[in-house]
View (cartoon, rainbow, N blue to C red):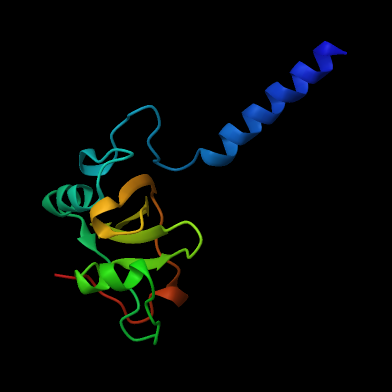
Length: 137
């Protein structure tokens, strides 16, 4: 009876690992684009990305989206690459572009000064969510 339980536990753990793996996300301290890392403050990661030629992808420029919560703070600090933040866990999604490539950066934190990078992927925003957008300067 012990063997099936251990086998099920191993399969479960492997499944969880696969579910959270993906794209260019860093694991075990690996560096991402422009040398960003998991748990790095968003402000620092953003600065590195911009210095390496990544441009913030302007979101919600003409779609009537109303910011709330931490989204308002980010918008007030001109983080116009913000797509959305969750209400329940203060996770946010931001987008950048460079020479036709797209980058999605996910963060966590309730205030800008506390926000850190949790992962990144080579992903473009949905066309429906970035109507009439361009690069922020």
